[in-house]
Image 1 (cartoon, rainbow, N blue to C red):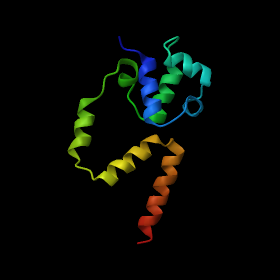
Image 2 (cartoon, helix red, strand yellow):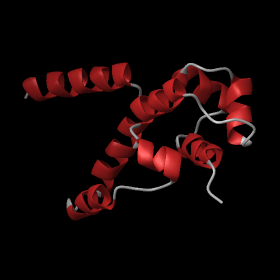
Image 3 (cartoon, rainbow, N blue to C red):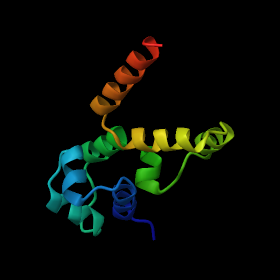
Image 4 (tube, rainbow, N blue to C red):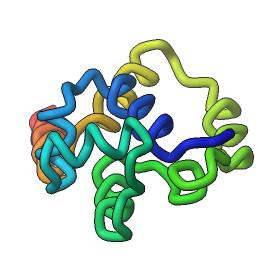
Amino acid sequence: MFSIGENIRKLRKTAGLTQIEFAKQIGISQGTLSDIEQGNCNPSVDTALSIHNHFNVTLDWLLKGKQNRSTIEQVNALDLSETEIRVLEVMNQLDIFEKQRVLAFASFTLNQK
């Protein structure tokens, strides 16, 4: 049977974060995150939206375990280099403010050419 907590644990581990780090990013306590991951409770709507916003996952994936195949197919069709894939993986782990800083640095670097 599908568990929201299992998906959240999988996402956290994929991001390379501890429960404390992940919980801090989404605005809940480590204890609450532990309860969610163990299936003792479900995340609130606010928590689900925070995970969606911080980690760029769809609510369908988070709540039902379903992925948007068309998006995956589109990414695979891009024929990205290993470096480009790594950049996307790293960017996906950053919060919105860190992404904005990286974008500003990249724009600055481009303008220096």
